[in-house]
Image (cartoon, rainbow, N blue to C red; front, side, top):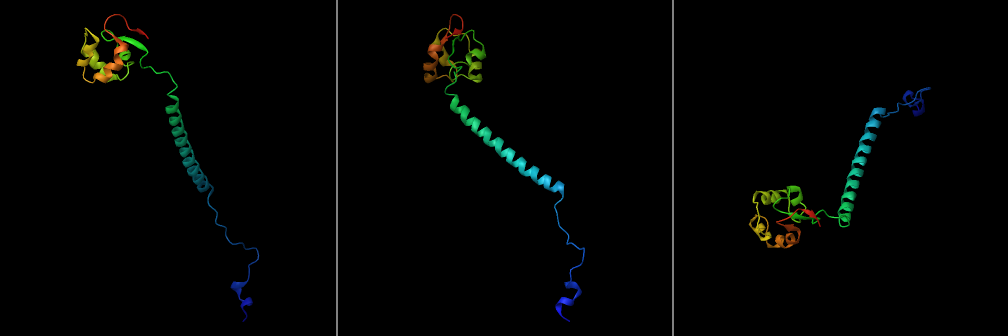
Length: 133
């Protein structure tokens, strides 16, 4: 019997082999995952770019530091924090150690050394009102 005559070799009329397709929801979920990863990567890149740009632009923005002449005996913590190198902790220590007779009395506050005193000296007073520079 020749090979062409065998039943299993004949094509069936009207028969199509099955086409294996992925379910629509699987395609959708794969698309959503890839799209989500792409979106997250885009957001991370955008944030990194903005942080880099903001650090660059901060050189051109006016600084709050040194905008006031501060009376250390009457100033609030917020006013003291406008002084260069003075954060919330040192501002609290300055307030706790009041009153000051002279500007040099700020040396007794822990965290204020000779270098910080040089930058503070033109911006602090012990008598009078806190005012704009």
